Length: 325
Picture (tube, rainbow, N blue to C red):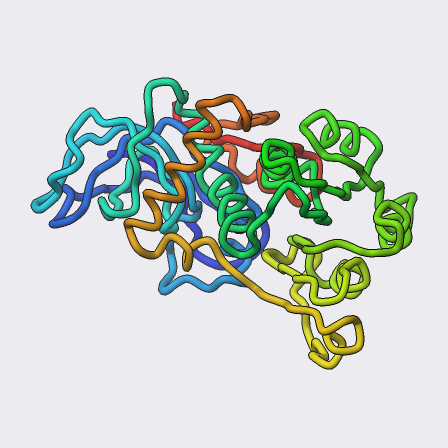
């Protein structure tokens, strides 16, 4: 017997239950993982509440984890028992042990600890596709990055600095602004005390940004568009304040023939070759020291309810890891 968080109905953090579960032997193309650390991400909230419905109830939430392979199923030739691995997706990571498709996991070098591996996969690969695929960030790129003191944001601050790009970030407190600047943000804006649109215009001499990365959603959408230069790209990749609804596409014309996209990591890593390329780039910048994972909070996995409450109350900064033992 092993344990996992199970959700029997959508709702608040309290719907997550710590239960005994049975995990079968791995089938063809699968591996059985003994997980040591699990990443906490805001997408877990969307899954828990039903904003991202799952195929059936009950289910185990969570999109990210790291640990050791206990057994491999038939047809798995490039992995073996004892390998240290990590992954981002599919759902089911809030568990001590789990089955997962072998083509969804990657080996982790000994230089990267399990907690770092669990914290970096979803958030780090998100930054990689945002900066290398959705928009090709160059040293002359000027960007606006909302929630720059969050887990994705702090990785973005470091990666932008590594590239040499200008990152203008937003956060909700002066302390969070200072944290993001310490991690490489060029400029920070406290959106609770400053008008971020006016400040971006000031910082860019009225030109605006090449690209805006917005994981906040409804409350920042229109302001984000006003921060772009003509032909700029608005990348909405999350909805912490609620989804963008009733969007009038004519706004894109009136604000400078803008582009808008709503990408997701899982399209960018759907093919194993793309997953290995994306994870390989991430592992490289982490091993080189260009990107350091800022794990500011750890919780026992059985205390996921408390972790979710803190996450939604914006009490967390950087990355958060749930520990299985």
